[in-house]
Image (cartoon, rainbow, N blue to C red):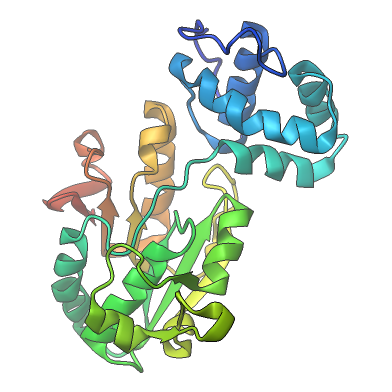
Length: 290
């Protein structure tokens, strides 16, 4: 998907002069345009230190002498789709925790009951489109089981553009002292590691069975692969990385893959009242599909 040209950005805090590589303004601008076209992410001028830190590791791994050489090879297709995926993985942010923005999970209890009654026994379909390392998907699955039972008629499709964090999510192994998990939930939903695995926990099979993990780029033109329409969509703290036109395009596509009356849960700093023709505000950072 190709976007309109971005306005040029100036580097506010350049990378230190003694750094291993030189990140020139032209390099940063090129990176900024490539990640915008590839993933819809809008990088601002203050992000050059973050870009240097994350991409310089990839330069070392691929033995590239400079950012310019790496980017030239990337655009030339030297590493194929795999290297494009590495590029995207480097520049995506994955901040997550179990039951983050907890008010959503309290609201979800009543929403699940209402939607299950409305669906007349048909399985609920829930999409988490920023799965990251899995804490949010498993929080959703725990809420589903606690509300509708262990044999709940529900399916969670959990996706992310970053393939490395998805691999972590699929393993379902976490530190036993992970933030956001109560002792009751630890006992009910996780298996404790022993011996060499002491201090770790693994999600129980009944939790994992509800979830299908898959890579997905929100800029992908083909959303039909997601399958039947969704009843709930969690798209939290994703749109903050997009500009206005990209946000609108993604909202239109989410509207197209949800049922009438479906619910959209977004991050605490995200507001889509300008798109009330698609989704109307129903509660605190919860929208209903028009």
